[in-house]
Amino acid sequence: MAKTISPMQTMLMGAYAGLPVLEPTPFLDLFRNKPNFVSSTLELAFDVKINKQTAASLVEKGAKGKGSITPNTWVRKKVTPGDIYDEDSLSATELAQMQAGETEVFLIGGKPIKTGQQLAEMKLQRIKNSIEKRKNIMCTQLINDGKIYDSYGNVMLDYEIPAADTMTYSGSTVFLAEFSKKIAAFRKRTGLMPDRSLIGADIVEKMLGDTLVQDTMYKLGYTNIAQNLTVNEKALVIGTFMGQTLEQMDLSFDAKGVEIIPGNVIKLLATDQFRNGYTAIEVVKDINMAPELWNGDIWTDIENMSKSVAKAKIFARSGYFPIVVDSQAIYTINVTIA
Image (tube, rainbow, N blue to C red; front, side, top):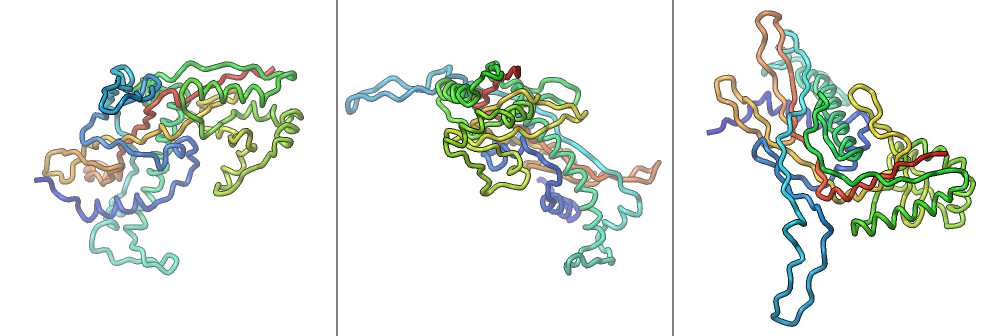
């Protein structure tokens, strides 16, 4: 019979869940509040669409028509992703502060907070920041080339998004006319309508100096929509055109500080095709028990003291993996700026 988690583990999990995300995660944010695919094993299995959905048959009453879902419309993808993991050290004194029965209490904003909880939150904040950063990197990789890589550069899964379209933006280019053609191409190819139009910084720089772009948007009723947006999101909104909010694509870097999506790229996205995947996490709830699988978005715990250096470590694991159920939902345009 599985053992319930200890009071310490309960405190750590609650502290982690209550912490904010302190660094921008613009590409992970595209997946927030999307449906979750949760696995009870270490393997994540889900169906992805590989062909455009056809219309159902219209037949006489009682007659049987041809099915619209053909065997090659959907394909099952399977992946066993690794865990997202980070840790921080705990000295013997810090560990003692986090044990049950502590007496030191601070008042933070009039709220009593035990030293153990305060220490846990301080340690876990750095860990949560790093885990969210890795999740953001994974989402950026998916949107960039459809592939998700581990920390060593190995491809964990290739969603096989379509090859990039191309466009030239020179002094004679009517940019918004060309952009409208790309919207139409996206619609024709996928049957979907993009809800996010992300434009690379190099392209935006040229747009802002393009009087034809500015004049056209003004004549079409240009507005800089800022309702229900954060300060960072408002700063990236260029304006609206044909019902599309044009946004400067936020910067996103890998773990080495290298930009993942270059500034000469446009991404048209149908984010309703995005999902969040979670595999089970292998955990040890008690040192005297065998490992078992934990079904949840995060696991955090403290590892036993090291006798040689008198230290322990606090750590967290996540089985998160971003999903796109229709690879056609990511439309890439490589722009040559002349």
